Length: 90
Image (cartoon, rainbow, N blue to C red):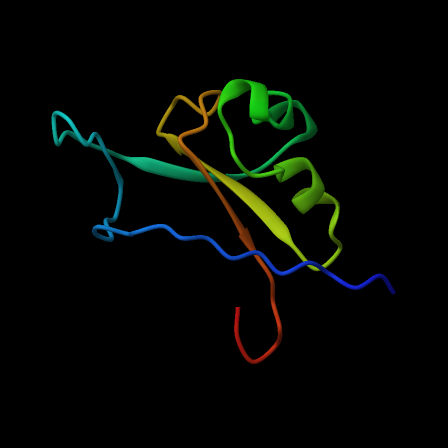
C-alpha cells in the first residue's frame, strides 16, 4: 500500500457555527451536507480558487468527502470536508 501524505494547514478558525454565515452581512443560512460527486470536482480546481487538490482526496479509499451547501442550492459549494473512520476516532 502506498504511503499516504500528511497535510498541515496554517489556518485560524475564528468560530464554529451550526450553519453557513456570511462574514460581511452576518446572515446565517441553513446548511446541507452532501457527498461530493464527480461533477462537483470539476468546480473545485486551483483555476477556480481552491487551494487543495480535492480530486486526489476523493481517490483515497479511507476517506469520505462531503460538500457544504446552502439549503435548496446544492450546486454551489460553500465548503468541503474529508473524514476518515479509524474505528476509535474520526
